[in-house]
Amino acid sequence: MGWTDIFVLLFVTVGPVKAALLFIGLTKTADAKLKRAIAIRTVLVSTVICIIFAVIGAGILAGLKVSTEALLIAGGIILLLFALDLILADEKAPEQNDAPPPAPTLDIATFPLAVPLMASPQGLVAIVAIEGTLQSTGQGIVFACLILLMMAINLGVMLAAEKIFSKIPPAILKIFLRIVGLLLCALAVQLVIYGLDGLGLIPSPDVELNSPA
Image (cartoon, rainbow, N blue to C red; front, side):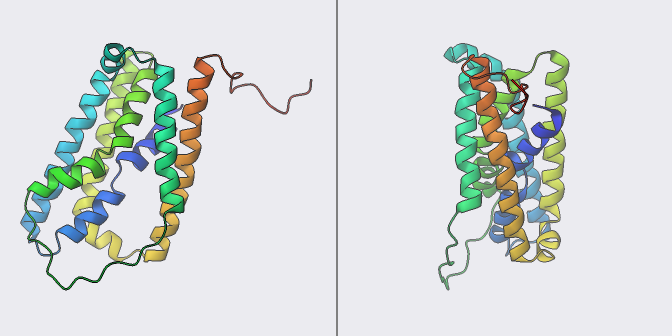
C-alpha cells in the first residue's frame, strides 16, 4: 500500500467530514470562542489517541499474539462494512423535535466528536493494521507525520465548517460521501488481499491476471 492510499484511508476513517457535520449541529447555540475551543480539543484528543495506536500498534499485536495478516483481514472487513454503510445507508427523514438543543459544552469535544467520530473504531483498526506493515523506523515517522497532517486538516475544516458546508449543496455532499465510500471499499478489499497474500492463500497481487499462459 502506497502513501497515497494510506492518506486516502486516513481521510476517510479519521478525517473531518462526519465530525464536522455533527459539530455544526451540536454547536448551533455556542459563541465563536466556545466553538473554537471545542474544535481544538476534539482534534487534540483525536491526535493523542491516533498517535498512541500508531506507536504501540506492534506491541498490541505482539501482546495479543495476533499476526499482521490476521489484523489486515479483520481490519479490511471492518472497513468494508463501514464503506458499505456510506454507500448503501438508507435515507432517513429527520425526526421533528420542537425542543431546543442542549447547550453545548467542552465535554462534547471528547464524546461524541473525538470518539467515536474522528478517532473512529475503524480508523484505529486501520492505523494499527498499517503500522503492522511498516518496515522501518523511517516509515513509522512518515506515517506519524501523515496522521498529524490529517489532524491539521481536521482542525482547519472544523474551524471553517459552517462556511464550508453552507456552500455545498446537500446532494453534492451525498454524492461525495458515496464516492468516498466506493474508494474505501476498494482499499478495504486490498487490505484483505494483503492479508491473504501474506498467509500464502492467494497468488501475489503483483501477478498480471491477463498474462498469456
